[in-house]
Structures are given as C-alpha cells and as structure tokens.
Amino acid sequence: MAGVQGRVALVTGAGSADGIGFACARVLKAAGARVAITSTTGRIHDRLAELGPEGAFATTADLTRQADVDRLIAQTEAALGPIDILVNNAGMVQTGHDTQSRSLADTPDADWAFGIDINLTSVFRMTRAVLPGMTARGYGRIVQMSSVTGPVVGIATSSVYASAKAGILGMTRALAIDVGGKGVTVNCIGPGWIRTGSSSEAEITAGRHTPLGRPGTPEEVAHAALFLAAEEASYMTGQLIVVDGGNTIQEYKVAL
Image (cartoon, rainbow, N blue to C red; front, side, top):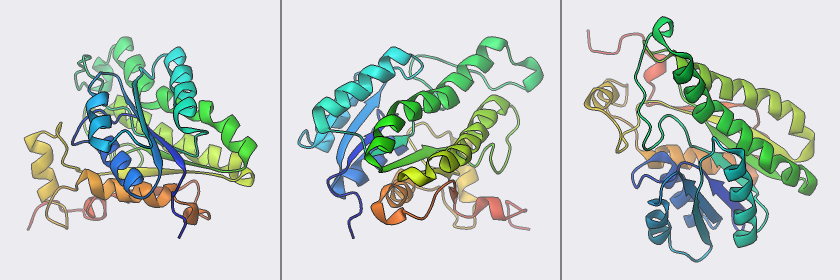
C-alpha cells in the first residue's frame, strides 16, 4: 500500500500536545509523510521537537488572516515541497480568545462573526490556497475536521459552532464535485465525544454514555484522517465519516 509515503501533509490546529491535530500529525509522519504543523502560538515548536525535525516543519499562523495563510503555504512548500494533503483541523477555540455559549437570540454580531471565521472561513481560506497546486499536479487529499454537532446533531447554545461545522460539510460536498475529475478528493470527519486536554468533565461523562462506554481518543480520529489522506482512498469523496463511539445511533443515552 502506498498510503501517504513521501507525501507532504499540512495539519492546522496542531498546537495542543493531546489534541486531534497533533495526533493527526503524529500518525501521518509515522506512516511516512513529511508533515507541516501550525497553530496560533509558539507552542507549535514544542510539538515539532516531539515529532522530530527531520521531514517536518512548524510555524505559527492565524488562519483568520489571509496574509498568514499565504505565508504558511509558501513556507511549507519551501521547507517540504508541494502540499499533497491538507488536514483542516483548526477551529472551535483560539488561544487567547474567550467565547461564551449563548442562545442564538442572545448572540452578538461579533461572536457570530468570530465563530464563523475561525471554524468555517479559515477552512475556506486554507482549502482555496492549496487547490491550484493540487489540481495542477492532478493529485490531492483534503480532510476537513467537521463535527457531529451541526451535520448530525445539535447542542443547546451552540448554534454558531453548529452552523460553521455544518457549513464545512456543505462546502466539502460542493467542492468534491468541482474537483472530482482533477485527482483531488475532499472529505469530512465528524468527531463525537473525544477526550482531549480541553475536554470538560461533562463531556467526559457524555462519552461514557456512548455504546462503547468511553470517550474516543485523538488517535482514533487521526487514523480516520490517515485513511482519507491515503492514496488508496481514491474512490471516496464528499463523505462524512463519523467517529463517535456510536453515540448518534442511539436514542437513549443512559441505561433504562
């Protein structure tokens, strides 16, 4: 299997040591990819040290700024070569910027704009940036980290986040049709309750009520990303793979 051997992969939102983004980077590098990682803070250089600098690259970037996106793409390609795989993981929260969960009626314009910007528009900017190179070379794998929240289920006071994550799935499906004949596939992953460093105790408890009886791990999500990023996933595009321990297939979340 060719997998991702020798391919250049760029993973966004990889600053947290125990987050999904860095797990994706570790799994891709272990499978033979050359990996670039980014986050908004300098801790990304700690992650690079953990990955090992050979065949890897790291830099900070704020993906809400087009100039940072352009610089990230240019620096990655200068360090590792043309980008074959993009894992759009950044979103949900941004270090140094606090947001509150609110009902839609109580959501200020600024909170709506920020939530859509970091969760959806950043994905648009990154995807748009890599597409010309991928289509010119006739090969690309784009993996969008959506969520079950929005595309599959809803959570009270999470309308901004849900709207953005549902928007990622809509973008993915439309783009998959646009570029399907150009050697580029575009797919989504929908994580459920995954235990990361930012998980609350309520989220951990919710994970214990899945059919598998536990929250998922970042590595379990990362292996789904590895599959979608591989050469062998050539006949999958426009799809949402749900990684949620079966939570969304059950009506009752607790034992009767």
